[in-house]
Image 1 (cartoon, rainbow, N blue to C red):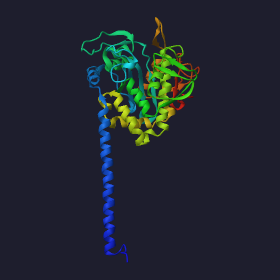
Image 2 (tube, rainbow, N blue to C red):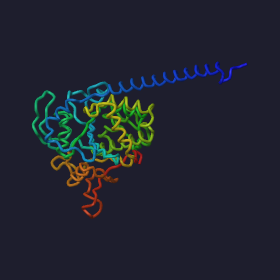
Image 3 (cartoon, one colour):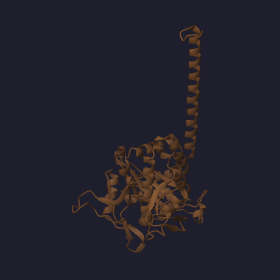
Image 4 (tube, rainbow, N blue to C red):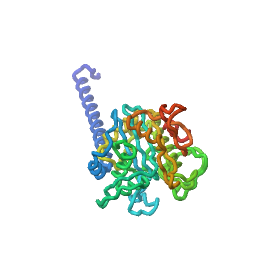
Length: 376
C-alpha cells in the first residue's frame, strides 16, 4: 500500500522533494548570477579609458561649445590608421605616428527620434588650433588637412578642431583601430554587401568577385579602406562605401536580434569592448549599454549617413573644402537637434541649400539610411 500525498509519510516526501527543487533552483540562479558577474567584470575590464584627452579638453572648457539641447548626444567615432598593436602591422610600416583614417560625427537625437552619422573628410582643409603634443610640447595654430590634428595632438586636438569648425560640442568619443574593426564584424558573423564590379586592390589586401556576398573581418576592413583601385580613387567614394557598410552593419545588428539575444550579444560586446578606447563617460559596460539601448530605439530608416557638404579645395584639387551655406545649415540643425533629411544622389556633387525653389525650405543632403543596407 502506498502512502497518499495527504498521509504523514507522503507529506514528508513532498516537503523533501520541494526542498531539493528549491535547492536546485537556487544553485541555477547563483550560477547564472556568477556567470553574469564574471561576464560583466570581463567586459568592463576590456575597455581602455582615455583620460589624457579628457584632461586636455578640460583646459579649454571656456572655449568649447554649449552642450547639446534636448538631451541629444554627439559622439565622435575615430578610425585610427595606427600600425601598432597585434594584427595591425600587415597594413604598412609603423612610423610611430597615426592619423584619423576615418572620422564620423554621430548625432543621437533625444528620445530615440533619429541618429545621423556625418563623415568628415580626412583631407578637408581646416584651422587646427595649437595643441599639446605627445611629448608635452605645443604645436602652432595652422591651416592644414583635418586628419593631421590626430597626429599633432591625438583625440583632444581632433575634437577641438571639429568643435571650432562646427560649433557642435562633442560629448563622447571612441577610437577603433584596424584589428578592432575586424573583430566587431566577425562578432556579427559578417556583413552582406553587393558589388557591381569585381575588386582587386593589393594595397587594401582585397580581391572580391562581383555580386552579393558576405564580408568578414579582413575582407570588410579592406572594403572600407580600399581607394586606389575603386571608382575614381577619391576619398569621397571611400567614405560613401564606409557609409554603405556601416548602414548594412546597423541593419544586420537590429534585424538579426543581436541586441535582444544574450548569446548573440555577448560576442559583439566582447569584441567591441576590447576594440575601443573611449572617454571616461563611456568607459563602463553600463554606459555602453545605455548608448546601445538608445540606438536600439531608433528605427533603421531613421539612422542616416552622409558626408559633410564638400568639394575640391580651390588651391589643391587633392584636398577638400566645405560647401557653404550647406555645411553651416547641417551643423546648425545638429546643434538644435532638428531632423536632418537625406536623399539619394550623386555623392560626388555638393548639396543644395534646400528642397525646391524655396530657399527657406528644410535643407536636404545627399546620403542614405540604414534601412537601405548595401544592396539597395
